[in-house]
Amino acid sequence: MPDAREDNERTLRHEMWRRYSGDDWEAFDALPAAVRKRVAEHAYDAWSVNVMLLWQHYKRVYGRTPRAERALIRYLDYCERLERAAFASRYTEMYGAMLPHDAAAATILREKPEAA
Image (cartoon, rainbow, N blue to C red):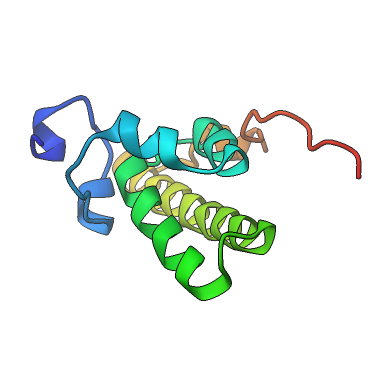
Protein backbone atom coordinates (compact mmCIF):
# COMPACT_ATOMS: atom_id res chain seq x y z
CA MET A 1 0.00 0.00 0.00
CA PRO A 2 1.47 3.37 -0.94
CA ASP A 3 2.10 6.01 1.67
CA ALA A 4 -0.96 8.26 2.05
CA ARG A 5 1.01 11.16 0.60
CA GLU A 6 1.81 9.14 -2.55
CA ASP A 7 -1.79 8.45 -3.51
CA ASN A 8 -4.84 10.67 -3.78
CA GLU A 9 -4.94 11.44 -0.04
CA ARG A 10 -4.50 15.17 0.54
CA THR A 11 -5.56 15.47 4.17
CA LEU A 12 -3.72 15.06 7.44
CA ARG A 13 -5.21 11.61 8.09
CA HIS A 14 -1.79 9.98 7.87
CA GLU A 15 -0.85 12.07 10.92
CA MET A 16 -3.90 10.86 12.88
CA TRP A 17 -4.36 7.21 11.96
CA ARG A 18 -2.49 4.16 10.83
CA ARG A 19 -3.84 2.57 7.67
CA TYR A 20 -3.63 -1.21 7.72
CA SER A 21 -2.84 -3.02 4.50
CA GLY A 22 -5.10 -5.55 2.89
CA ASP A 23 -7.77 -5.91 0.25
CA ASP A 24 -10.19 -3.02 0.82
CA TRP A 25 -12.96 -4.56 -1.31
CA GLU A 26 -12.72 -7.95 0.38
CA ALA A 27 -12.82 -6.28 3.80
CA PHE A 28 -15.77 -4.12 2.78
CA ASP A 29 -17.71 -7.12 1.50
CA ALA A 30 -17.14 -8.99 4.78
CA LEU A 31 -18.74 -6.24 6.89
CA PRO A 32 -22.40 -6.42 7.98
CA ALA A 33 -24.82 -4.53 5.72
CA ALA A 34 -25.49 -1.73 8.25
CA VAL A 35 -21.76 -1.10 8.69
CA ARG A 36 -21.13 -1.19 4.91
CA LYS A 37 -23.87 1.41 4.45
CA ARG A 38 -22.30 3.68 7.07
CA VAL A 39 -18.81 3.23 5.62
CA ALA A 40 -20.16 4.21 2.19
CA GLU A 41 -21.60 7.41 3.70
CA HIS A 42 -18.47 8.32 5.67
CA ALA A 43 -17.24 11.84 4.87
CA TYR A 44 -13.79 10.41 4.14
CA ASP A 45 -12.58 7.04 2.91
CA ALA A 46 -13.12 4.98 6.06
CA TRP A 47 -10.40 2.51 5.03
CA SER A 48 -12.33 -0.76 4.91
CA VAL A 49 -9.47 -2.90 6.20
CA ASN A 50 -9.29 -0.75 9.34
CA VAL A 51 -13.05 -1.02 9.75
CA MET A 52 -12.87 -4.80 9.35
CA LEU A 53 -10.27 -5.00 12.12
CA LEU A 54 -12.53 -2.90 14.33
CA TRP A 55 -15.49 -5.14 13.43
CA GLN A 56 -13.52 -8.20 14.54
CA HIS A 57 -12.86 -6.48 17.88
CA TYR A 58 -16.52 -5.51 18.38
CA LYS A 59 -17.63 -9.07 17.53
CA ARG A 60 -15.32 -10.40 20.25
CA VAL A 61 -16.76 -7.93 22.75
CA TYR A 62 -20.48 -8.13 21.86
CA GLY A 63 -20.80 -11.14 19.58
CA ARG A 64 -22.12 -10.84 16.03
CA THR A 65 -25.13 -8.78 17.11
CA PRO A 66 -26.95 -5.59 16.14
CA ARG A 67 -25.50 -4.10 19.33
CA ALA A 68 -21.98 -4.70 18.00
CA GLU A 69 -22.93 -3.08 14.70
CA ARG A 70 -24.39 -0.01 16.44
CA ALA A 71 -21.31 0.31 18.67
CA LEU A 72 -19.00 0.19 15.65
CA ILE A 73 -21.10 2.73 13.76
CA ARG A 74 -21.02 5.08 16.78
CA TYR A 75 -17.23 4.70 16.88
CA LEU A 76 -16.97 5.44 13.14
CA ASP A 77 -19.09 8.56 13.70
CA TYR A 78 -16.72 9.61 16.49
CA CYS A 79 -13.66 9.09 14.26
CA GLU A 80 -15.32 11.09 11.50
CA ARG A 81 -15.95 13.98 13.92
CA LEU A 82 -12.28 13.88 14.98
CA GLU A 83 -11.13 13.98 11.36
CA ARG A 84 -13.46 16.82 10.46
CA ALA A 85 -12.36 18.84 13.50
CA ALA A 86 -8.68 18.30 12.68
CA PHE A 87 -9.24 19.25 9.04
CA ALA A 88 -11.21 22.36 10.02
CA SER A 89 -8.50 23.38 12.49
CA ARG A 90 -5.77 22.95 9.87
CA TYR A 91 -7.84 24.89 7.35
CA THR A 92 -8.23 27.79 9.80
CA GLU A 93 -4.47 27.77 10.51
CA MET A 94 -3.65 27.84 6.80
CA TYR A 95 -6.24 30.34 5.57
CA GLY A 96 -7.21 32.35 8.65
CA ALA A 97 -10.88 31.65 8.07
CA MET A 98 -13.43 29.10 9.11
CA LEU A 99 -13.82 26.04 6.90
CA PRO A 100 -16.57 27.08 4.45
CA HIS A 101 -18.53 23.88 5.08
CA ASP A 102 -18.62 24.68 8.80
CA ALA A 103 -19.25 28.39 8.27
CA ALA A 104 -22.33 27.44 6.24
CA ALA A 105 -23.41 24.98 8.96
CA ALA A 106 -23.65 22.36 6.23
CA THR A 107 -24.21 18.75 7.16
CA ILE A 108 -22.72 15.58 5.73
CA LEU A 109 -25.02 14.15 3.09
CA ARG A 110 -26.42 10.84 4.25
CA GLU A 111 -29.58 8.89 3.69
CA LYS A 112 -32.23 9.63 6.25
CA PRO A 113 -32.45 6.90 8.89
CA GLU A 114 -35.39 4.58 8.43
CA ALA A 115 -38.29 5.17 10.78
CA ALA A 116 -38.34 2.71 13.67
